[in-house]
Image 1 (tube, helix red, strand yellow):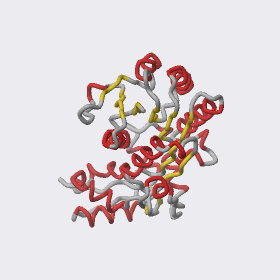
Image 2: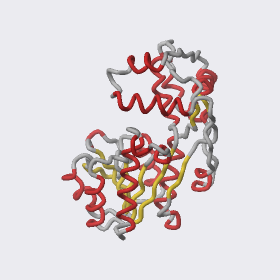
Image 3: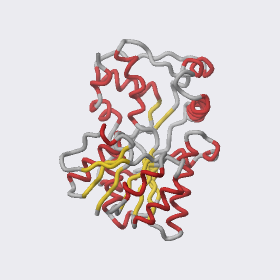
Image 4: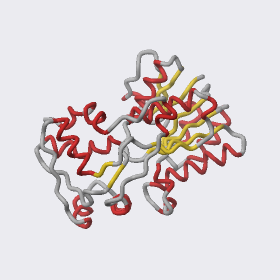
Length: 283
């Protein structure tokens, strides 16, 4: 089996590449900028820009399975070219946000939902099998606080008591490894969560304990926060984030044991993630 991993500069994809290689699975690391990749020795690279359909055919040649990031711009074309190339299985890195009632109208959820629907339609037509991984909050989202905490400043949290289910990127990668290498797991959707529901203040407290450094926060109004990020977060995404945080304010996130069911071990805690990334939060 040969697996094409798209978005190979990402944390999940790069971890998955190492896992596949260690398992003896032939893997190709794909990116829109393959020259920037540093895969394990012996792992090849490919140019695959999910916003540029002209790169699809060459990247898909000889590929049996694909780990796909949810870029919806040309998903129908990607599915068609994967079918033409003889791909047997596509594993989509989707999001639990697709399960929300307003997913089709939400700027964050909509691309994931569109990708899921396109791949499911292709699978229903006999093109290939499609598997959807739907993680909740990535633990690595906490890295957005790292610059402020390194400099002794306080991250701005308009909803400090918004809950999430932070999941370690390695658990997502190990779940992907399982569905790519176990045929019986193909063709389903898997809701992945971390083992704990934590609000932002609880996550900051864990970071403070792990790093031995203060991890304070400020609480701007949603309008103040939106104005402060206007230079680098488009308004539609800022609105989607604020709506998500508001809907989870004071409301613990339901958890699943899907990571354990797929990988054979419990999902890693946020404390484990913080220990693995402590250097990012220290000067």
